[in-house]
Image (cartoon, rainbow, N blue to C red; front, side):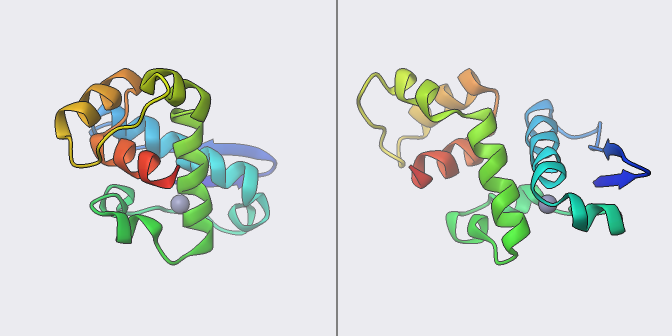
Length: 122
Ligand SMILES: [Zn+2]
């Protein structure tokens, strides 16, 4: 969740989730603070199922522009393009190569779904 109350920003993540998921959620909520401060000052913004958004590339695109922007922000924050390019050593990766995606995901401490989404978005 993301909320701004009396000028103080608040981000909440589920401590029971995997650390990688918590990192993505925190980055996603940070995006709402930066990009959607007006909206989250008026009401608590609760995200349910960010993980669900990444089950496949179609749903990852979402339909709510705020969520699309927050996911893109979080993805770029946690997997900066220049660092990903370094990791790929000028090459690419086969999006069907699960082991290669797992190696990259571990390196950037994100889920394989988040890594696949980032790779597909480049
Ligand atoms: Zn959101």
